[in-house]
Length: 96
Image 1 (cartoon, rainbow, N blue to C red):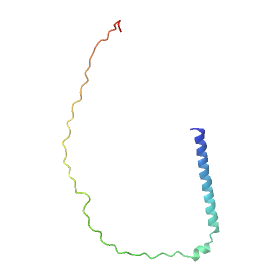
Image 2: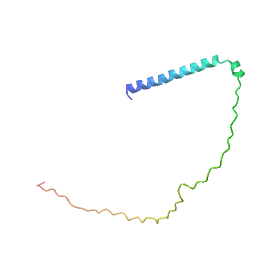
Image 3: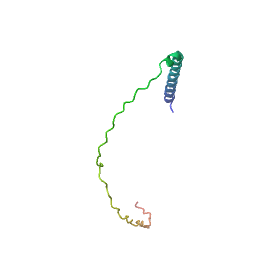
Image 4: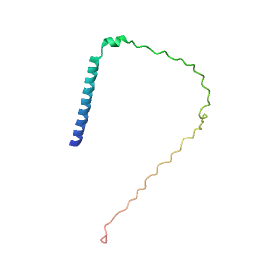
């Protein structure tokens, strides 16, 4: 790993940690300012659900008809070719 990559990683990580610490500090500040009296004075009300009648879905034909496939007989494997071994003698010739 090069020094530039190490430095870049350090700066990236430190920036994330600094941002995280700042967010946590702001959340703590907001929690301290929120008064419990205000939260209790306004109870949460649920909205009434609107019930809609569901119509029946129209029946639709399948996208594609059933496909039937015939089974093929297993392939007959050809026997492996045996390598041809050729012996020959090499002799040194003065011309070469």
